[in-house]
Picture 1 (cartoon, rainbow, N blue to C red):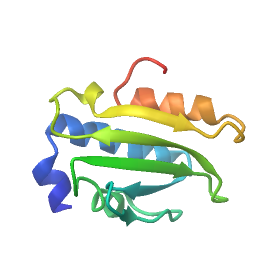
Picture 2 (picture 1 turned 30 degrees about the vertical axis):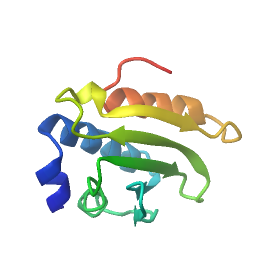
Picture 3 (picture 1 turned 180 degrees about the vertical axis):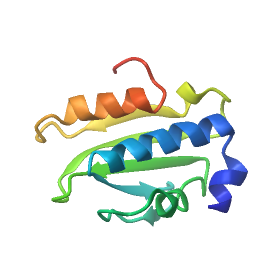
Length: 119
């Protein structure tokens, strides 16, 4: 978790934690890709500290959210060290149209992570 605490600002840490806590609370899984490799593979019941160990290796991360059945819901794209504002961490999200309710799920998590508007 050194990279997470050392390289991300407090606001960035808060936004990432909020997003991951919400994903876990809803019973979903998340994989994390730093732009170079998958740093965390999706696994149900993974503690938040295990997830945070895969965050912040580079200046960006892509978080892919899955149901417990490994069906892709969508993904979030985060850029770091660009602003100290919590609402500037997540720059985009996408959702899988074929997954029922995916758009609403991703928008709700997006808001909790620091954004107050929908794309």
